[in-house]
Figure 1 (cartoon, rainbow, N blue to C red):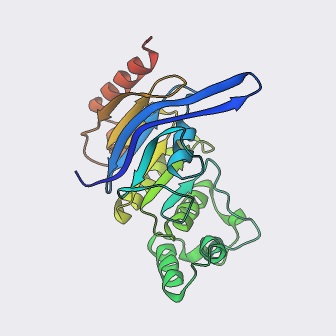
Figure 2: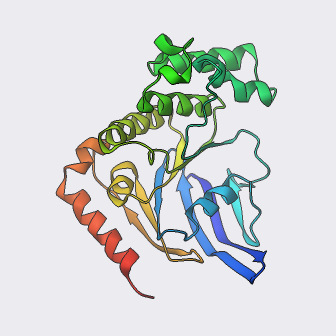
Length: 252
């Protein structure tokens, strides 16, 4: 199956003043190389917690996370993580923002610099390479943030509600843009979103989570050709979105 990422029985509990809280309960799924998975679930169910575990930021209480067949360790550049905000530094140019992570992690070489600059050119940011983020539209900022993340050549990309701060039209345009870039680079991706149509239009499969503590309720294949904009207009996408909504509303 050429699986790049595997979560096997992942559980996570932590202690609070009220006692022990169970955040994840035996979460299991896998992602093939180059696959795009969308993750949806009720608010507060643990979607972002799953990304934190996959990124190596949290250690699971039980189970294991494997990347390329090896246990995930502390962040080392193999996993790229885009947060809800683009986190571009306003006092650095687009090119300096792109190179910053490589510089901080001491991975900035002539080769990595050339690759990062090639991404800036490839994805239409050359005109803004020496500009500051304040000159960029919301969509261009997201593109710059994605290029910065891809500059590490991650094997796995994690997207945590990356379009949530954008208005509907910009969100749709940026989703199309981001999906195209990710497909072109062939990076395995996990997208967390509360937007069910977006999950269907972006993903190859959609993972539906239960209320907290999160476990996988259902995994739905999305066999609809085309990018997000085309998918959004199809009856098949509407039917899948309705199926996911019913699953989320289902009482245990």
